[in-house]
Amino acid sequence: MQPGSAYYFAQQHCLILRRQARASGMTDDEINALLRRGEWVAVRRGVYTTRAHWESLEPYVARPQLEVWAALLTKQTPQIASHDSAAYLQGLDILEASPRLVHITRHGALGGRTRHGVKHHKAPMEPGQIVFVDGQPVLDIPRTVADIAREHGLRHGIVAAGSALRADVTRRELRAAIAPMRSWPNVTLVRRAVEWADGRCESPGEDLTLLMLKQLGIGDVEPQFGLQENGRLAWLDFRIRRHFVEFDGHLKFRPVREGGLATQAPDEVLWKEKQRQDWVCGFKTGMSRLTWVDVQPDAWAQTQARLLREILATDALFGTSIDDLAPYRVRHPRRRPRR
Image (cartoon, rainbow, N blue to C red):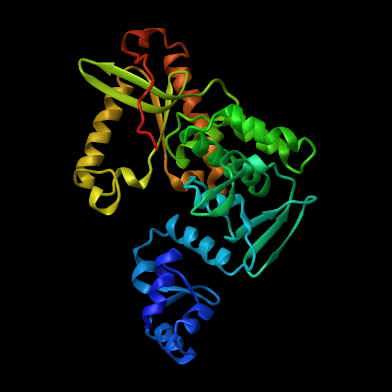
């Protein structure tokens, strides 16, 4: 590898264009040999990174983020990243779309086209909605939330809106981004996503659980309900009357050394979780548990039916009032780490 190519990797998120590699003194044969041996990886046609860098990247956020940078690198003029691409560059938690496209937007009447894995949008925008990430123009988070909800629907929209609220974007700012979209396609989905999202949810899995419970329409849903007694404290993801719903993400059971939250062996984590559930249900409450499998589109209706059955069973067993829980209820909001 020519020393000149190292400059491009250092300046371009560890990416290099084929024409830049040539300009640094490499031949096509040398470039192709690096690709054959697996020392370089093609992120998209004509844009490469090193195998070591690619394999070091987390697959759900970091690799899609690099794919956005790779697509933008091929453009001859600056492009405004938008939709999913703007979310990836700004660190917003979103659901992965299928197919996974790079999105760019330019000012104009509503419209768009897709070519070579890049979706080009035309839409009005305000100058104040453009921010910069490493010198790249990007539509800001409130506009990005609106664009994602319009593009992909309510599931994607509530996750993006919940992530924005967790990042300290206000609901007022989200509403302001929607205001000019009065007659835009799917704007009603955007409004619902923004109004239903709750910053107390701590993950995309909880955002989807909240959506599922809201759609059931069986009463108020309270995120992050705390119970304490004799020094013991438990925070429950959601409360509907005397019934709790917990979303169990895989990070709860993955060791810290592997990027998870578990500081003990999985069987110990499971045992403590059982003890916690037994203690909570000792207050004459019910509990449902969901995982990622349960909130997938093909399982959505079945999971909703199960939740409704279990919530109504708790109502029948223990009633609906929580007045007796008042001495044990935690009144202060749960503190979460700042992003």
